Length: 200
Image (cartoon, rainbow, N blue to C red; front, side):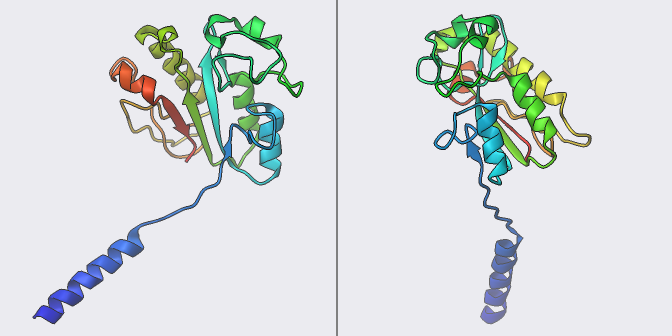
């Protein structure tokens, strides 16, 4: 009897192990920040040509409510301009050039680029929310809704939308994702981890 029980337990464990699917995915951080001019079309294009089909990037919202692809709140480190992104307009930021002479990219431009590629498998948008004082609850809601609406324009047929309350998870080109519920979630938690993952 002990042998049968042991065999049954071993068999269940083996089935459990084999049933788990593990995948290793490589994706390009900020479009390849160590190799290229981070968060720019040339960076994403170079990473794509190198074989990457997954990307991580950063989103911020300008004073006039436009979504821009930038990691830092201040333009000083990556561009020829200084100023807090959230206190500047789209027009002001569009005048800036990166340290390598590229244009600062906005979300529409990135989405158009992603849309031109047929085989991107994963994109993670990290919604930056510091300085915290510039992202009160109302602005967080607007921020999440704008990202959701823009990304959903590229959503493939049949993509599902499971919900989440703390993270912004948005699906566009493949099978899964969900909306950031800023009005239902805890704003403090969202400030710690506002992240939109799409295309998995």
